[in-house]
Length: 612
Ligand code: M6R
Image 1 (cartoon, rainbow, N blue to C red):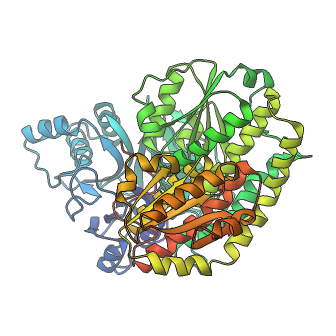
Image 2: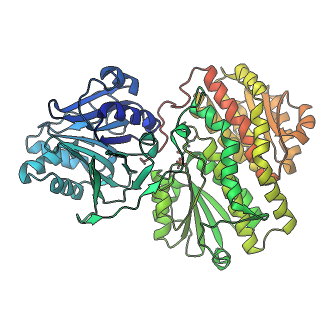
Image 3: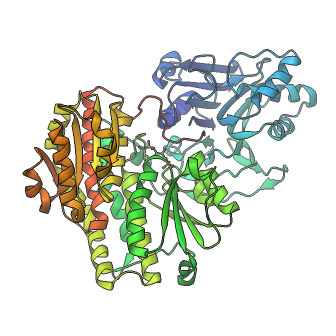
């Protein structure tokens, strides 16, 4: 939620900041702003409600704002509605300090009351403004901006990534972080901060990740970092292994479509390096066979689509490991009293690696003594760094709010983890193991065949795009798949949609089925195919239209019952969701397109959910 970027160098800052904000818009897009410092113009703040385009118009694409030092922000509103006044940067009342912030200051009411009692007027309803005002309050008294920053950080509670400009600091800005992502970028004669590397990848691939409690003094010639006690810290530099083209649309009308089409390659990159001589290897895992055997129970904890991956994982891991696997929403796990101990492995799944609920659940699991492993896409993200072990999905940057390639890579990685553990536990037959490995290798090519021809799905989307309610049904792995299909559809098309275990429908929800209701029936799970067909017959008897997804080998049989059948290639049963999800993503995409929705940036959503 919210994206921040900062630049100091020789070039004009504002166009660079706007460029960076464009890449961060997926994190929040209800308003945007920049603050730039220049010798002749002083501290200039330009901000506006609405998309970045509005700010671009206001600043002549940044050209009208003089100065080579600045910070920028794109907002996903938490405290205070989207408005010009609530947009960041926030200025102190003496106009000497400007602040951009990602996160939430939990004790802002108390601080605001204190400052107001000191006669300091407030402009906005945000929690962030207290940072700017409190900073100036301390600065007025001690005259040392770094000391004032430390005093503010000691007083505020909550999560923050902060970018701070001070009018009296003409060649630097300050950054601070706690529980919200922030990285430092090292360019040629210039330096950056950003919530995400996509914002600065055009300028540098050399980055360092700020840790909680750290404060950075960012100058064109270099960046000094200090720990929470104010002592200098040497940061490890990392080189990002992808370039600017990975974070651009590359000729596609939307990032979502581009990312859907990138899935075979993304899955290949996740799988191939970890398969050697027909066996799964995780060189990055520091777990012995003995460790694995010591796990009597597994949890999978995540949010949204990552949770849906966990739902598939529960079925697959229990089948492979013959040990209990619980899957839990992170927002529930963090406040529950889960039965975990040192013999439990809790697997956290997160594309962004910054989802606050997942992060909190991870900390809770660790506090309870569990062993933890994270499956994450964003390298160096908070969850990746805090978990005992991390497996990266290597899907590359995912920009569209609706996840596609991250989902697919998480899915195969979890399947591979299942195989890896099963081998250590001796719980899988050698022949079965070999078949799954061989199908994993074949998966990208099979995905390509589904993605090669999307015309029929496009046609079905044009037929059903104006429905007001769409149901997804399936059993076992198909139920888990339906959850993802339904979420994909509703988040980008705004059509009401629900996913049900097919056998559960008749316990209530079937009363919503009427003539013409579209039911997307998932029938890829062969062992329960007949049962699913019976459920299709039940909803058809109530007038439903059926759009069915199944395997090529079952398509002809299903065609006898369902009017619209979308076949996907056959693969090993455990991997079938990796193919079944593709028509659902494409259907959601074209439905949303027909409805004229803002596909990459659906209303009310943000890519990385760093609030509770
Ligand atoms: O970054 P994470 O995987 O932790 O994000 C979890 C959810 O917020 C995310 O999957 C969300 O549900 C997506 N918008 C779904 O497309």
